[in-house]
Length: 227
Image (cartoon, rainbow, N blue to C red):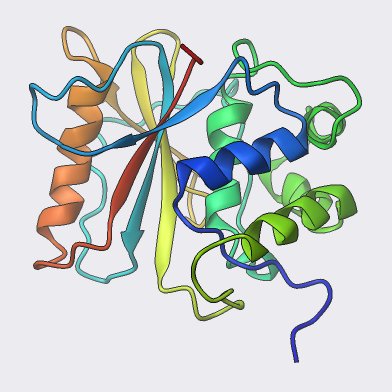
């Protein structure tokens, strides 16, 4: 029997995510999700992209991101995916994407997300996870969204795939945000320099996809300014 406090997995669906973040208090006139259909260099991913969220099947064969050097950034917003939230990797990735773009994303006053980010502003990644676990408003919106998906709702421990986010900090520093890592939840990938955000992210994604040995259960979605 499913616990009333269970957090179910969310589908990788831009339309569903729009409904979800609006329930959480994001002004959707400021934000959109765009599915990326190609990893080719000449693919027009669009401008004003704030983050990318990548879904892939869990596999021991996946390579560790090509981290160029150790670079810490205390200004990055991070949250840990604790065991009680083990099916919430989509939410964790969305929080990493939004939490590191709060200067661009408009949150409605006194909304669940506005209150969550305000109340956890000076907390550690672990402390934020506990607050999230006990946030009834976010949990209620999460479960309502999960029920609207096209597939069977998946309980904890049966997900089989994972979401991570890619964000840019300080104008040109690319980070992979992963709440389930044992080490830092923000991994510095490298500086963009003359490369585009899309080009550098697709390099990382292609590395992971090539290790999946033909498994096509992956998806890349951009979080961008509403056009």
